[in-house]
Image (cartoon, rainbow, N blue to C red; front, top):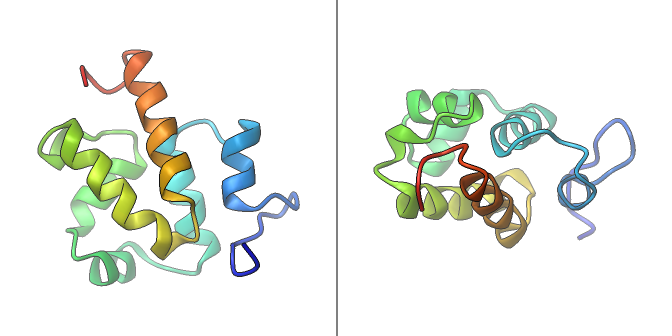
Length: 105
């Protein structure tokens, strides 16, 4: 956890998820990317996902991921690049799906 990103409020990215500081998975992705000093193109190159898909995900739109199973896989792949815990990020996404925010799982 020593290499994990710190937010301005002193939370690590994973800690912020645990405490509910961030509002959504999309916001978590965007904040982590910005905190890492990455552009969407940088993240696209590192993750091999299109910048347009990453932008949609940051905006809370996971419909371009190819389905919820693929969205979870993409989140799991993005998490370590952004200094996030993959399990925490996928759990948060699953919670949002259960709330009806991203279609049916």
